[in-house]
Image (cartoon, rainbow, N blue to C red; front, side):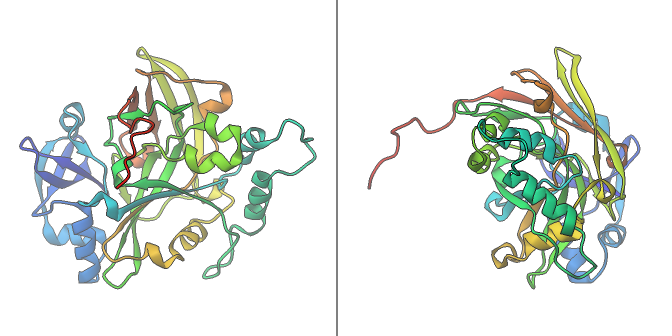
Length: 331
């Protein structure tokens, strides 16, 4: 089952199941979060909660996409209660580009960077026996729900940005139950979108480089994640493919298990606030930045993977809507 959130012609929110070219609208449901919390309280699965509520024939999927009415597949009505985070160096092959970025000019290739150390720890202990914690991955904060753009929308790029690079990834979508128990609803395609030039300047700028807009969806894939997944990441310029490359995901292509990544995120008590939403990016090994690509306003990103339905597409645009330097006032 694959779910989407969307707006009707009057701007009212609805939840639907993807059924080929048409959307089946879940009755009396205004958000995926509401649907999930109801399933948790009823002690049933998300799929069974949809069946319990029933569906009606709805709009054509293409019509929703063409009119920009598709929303991220999970959100919170108060963006401050949606935490967007991620883990890096989780995929086989992901360390090579990062290691080149973080090598110091006077450092020999024989010296092991922190990047390679963390990656090595993941290879050695990222897939522990069931029920046991393994090696701790790299973790980063991206922002709250206000930094998520809807599928099809442009990523705003601030004037201080040095790069605007895609990161094709899978995301885990979670809701915290009334008792503080985290529940995974499923997975979605994601474009984590980062500033790789800033990160390359110094590894300690990684936190700054991640504070950018992002997107995931358009569909929430309910159920377990296949172990071996292969998708495609593309960049279009003036309607033509500027760059494209396959990307791999799923545990067969990762040095960490999903359970280990989830454990090292939700082990923190501050992330267990009832009702909150969590969007977690699982990492990637494929970046156009590694191939020398520099995007510009008007370019379009596309992340596709057959098991996740419709591709995730976004553009970029420059923005100057930040506080001017010196605009802070003292009380």
